Image (tube, rainbow, N blue to C red):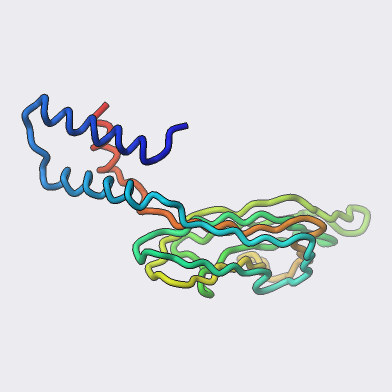
Amino acid sequence: MYSTSVLIACILSVAVARTELQNKPFTAEEEAYYDQLMEDVSTNERNWKECAWANFGSSKQNGEIKSCYFNKISKSSHLKVIVSSDMSLAGCNKCCKRWFVKFNGQECSPVPIDVVVFMRYGMGNYYKSLHRPRVLRGTCKIEINGLIDVSFNIGKCPHYGRNANGNTGWISSTRIYIEEMNEPQTKQVWENDAALI
């Protein structure tokens, strides 16, 4: 597997070769694109952090379960978050629980980073305690820099008024992984790269 910087260097060298062979200078748009690639090479060191807890076992039904503070360098970057834990439901019928991520007390918008667990039968003769390893993951653009409070939360599912019996982190590890990411590629960027192949 080649590193990002090696791949970017290859793209740049092919682009330069193309302009020399075709005797065609870069457009202003192409110049800006390749300048950004060069900047990405120079700032390619990863800024990441992981907070982890073993066997903490939370029976909290609403609100923050754990949080992890992250020092974000750029105002224009995105944060990638991966949360892994045991997330369970027990002793209820047609019940649902939601686990989700917040950044400084706010969920990502317009698309949150979350999972839901639903159980149709789990009481009486059908009693169940659904302990499963589950993962939340996603990226979110946070337009500030500095210290960011990334929190792992639990709450009700939308359209389910009944508060189900949820449990988090039962006899296992819980991790919050955070990484600062550059802007994602766009359709235009992809077309520029494809033209070099």
